[in-house]
Length: 290
Length: 240
Image (cartoon, rainbow over all chains, first blue to last red; front, top):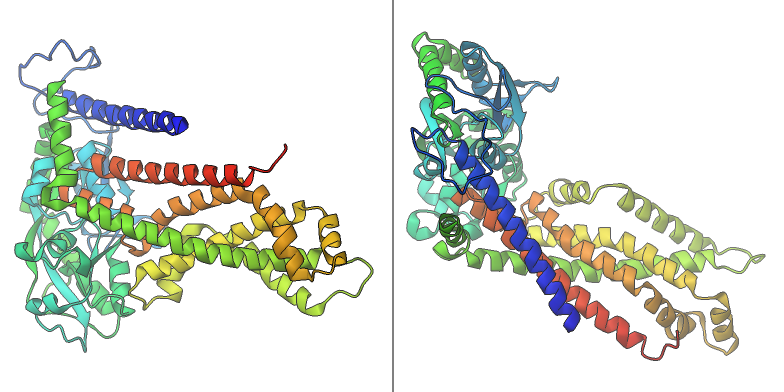
């Protein structure tokens, strides 16, 4: 028993030091935000003395001369991997245009959707562009640009499914979603909040896997954004999209909270691109005008 | 400093208290333990059977005609061990989940089968090592006293072998317990799945992930402790 106590102590110490380390990461992160005229407290000795806050209008990126965009490239037509391993899609092209406006080189970092959000939130990448819906909760942890597209969450079912309206979703035994997406968050909420409960929802690593699960009969319906849903339904026999939409939302670019200089630069470039029709022509290229 | 603690408390509440999220972790922990226990049972049964076949084949008396049936069984076991040990656990789980049992809705069951069959290959080699470590003289002595092959195995060889392999067997069980976390990749609702789910809802991953790390650690420590007791108990009559 004596042995166990020692072990327990060791474990506790390890956990505490871990959490302290994590805590430090948080504070340094905050220290980097440009604060207008506020003097840094004397206790924060770890802040590098030589660091200058960027002047108004100037912004810094994670890597000089490059614009890192984190995304989840399994979300056609917004982002997908080409056969040669490079990326394409609406988000990728809009990001490339923004990078060009800002005189930077675009670097696409592909990862899971949850990781892509977190990368921008923690400043591992400059921005996240992955068909990210602006929600109140997300606004609390990162800043968003102006919206550049409208996303519609729809429900995919098999053609002969008993689920024919969005209301029928309540009868679905299992709903497939993509991990960390708004579809997952809405669906897995408690029934009182308009969701269907954690027990009736499975989150898959990508939307494509969720659709695969639907085809194989692992789930009864998939809640996902309209644009990729169209692609998935076109690519697979026997699926259809319900006429009523699940939710309507705005897509925007997410940047690290407090990085106003970069956000302003991105917004400036984005507005210019929206005005001169570049964004629209990119969208038209991927989504056939109806 | 106070701000830091306030923030930590807020994040802790967000990760565990708010919306009764701790229930999700408990649910996940239940599935994790379920995966471990059942995969362990499959692994031990498979492992022992494979090990006995492999040793029986390898320890046939030299100069006598070799048994054909044993040769075939031995070949099957060898292929099984090669394939399972030669491919990553993650890939095996993805194949079980998305190829073989692609229509199953019970991801826990798929996870148990995948983990159990994986563990079996490792347990087989550990048990085989244990059986081989017991001197051939023990088997000969048992047989010459009139015990048949299985009885000699059961009463003389296996009890001695078991004591020898207990540490490595414990190692394998701990690995298996931690490998259950991979089942989240096929949608299994265990600890990692739910901590990721809480992170996705709260945009705060520190406490969900630290929390499950502590849970895994505590269970491994309990397992180590139990194995220690068993080992001491088995060594009671030892003179070494």
